[in-house]
Image (cartoon, rainbow, N blue to C red; front, side, top):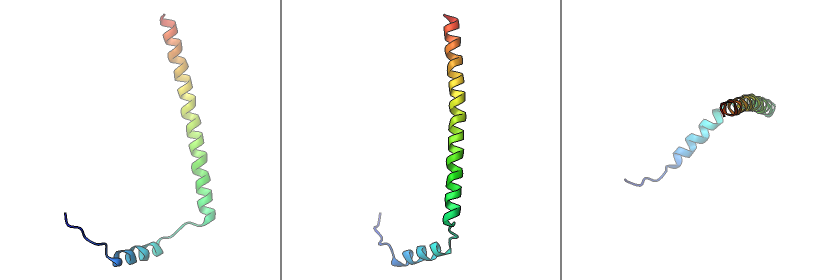
Length: 66
């Protein structure tokens, strides 16, 4: 495998493309981050609730069998 040096032109292209990106505002970033955190917490509670219910159900069925 031949070692090729990275051309400085690549970095110029990368910087040029990064300038074209439509970056979100600070307010939008904070708002969307809050939405992600809230949805993550709600989803965790939802999954935790059903995990608890199914664990109790399995424990009941195992104790019922004995």
